[in-house]
Length: 117
Image (cartoon, rainbow, N blue to C red):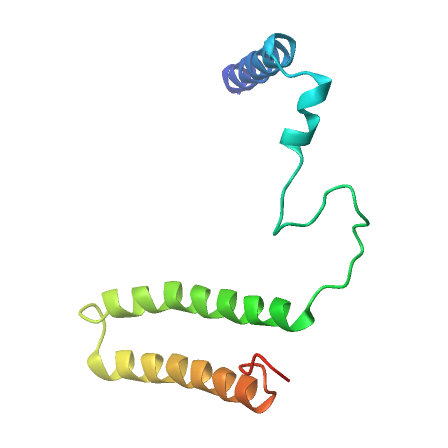
């Protein structure tokens, strides 16, 4: 336990020393501040941050992320095909695909898949 705490303390000290050296030895000046500012989709970083944003664009992004995660969940279902009983595998797969299709149907009914309202 003491050895583990000593190792963690050593890691903490070394990382802090490296960060301090990085800050001291960097060649950045005050004029480079503009280069370090985030640049998003052509927005001016010095303008007001609370500008109107398309809610529809945000919802389309959420739909994409949800379906992207669902693809990551489908891969293990494919890999477990030979590990479990075929009937059990079909029930689980059918249930998962039905949830996906019900979600897609709901989004379609809410007109979320149409870009223009």
